[in-house]
Length: 92
Picture 1: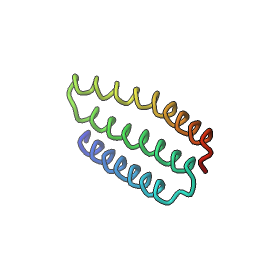
Picture 2: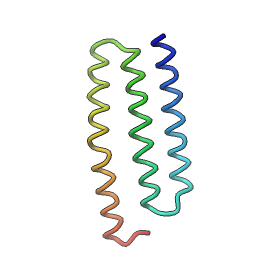
Picture 3: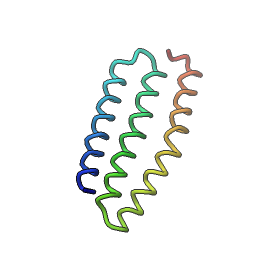
Picture 4: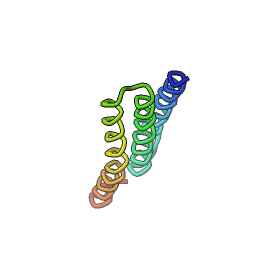
């Protein structure tokens, strides 16, 4: 059963990241592109991490949890810095 849930999470992560790429390509401004990119990366990769956690062994599970925590903590900060830089340079 865990294998099926892990497979479903991989498909979900792939779909989320695909929609994020479409959002990046279709978005009109830097800020909306940034929003699409940051949300899709966090949700897509965390979905992959949960799938790897369900399917992996203990050393892999520890690394995957650390990767997910690192992404959840750093992606909003990086997005904020990029948006602040875009604002200061006058990008629209």
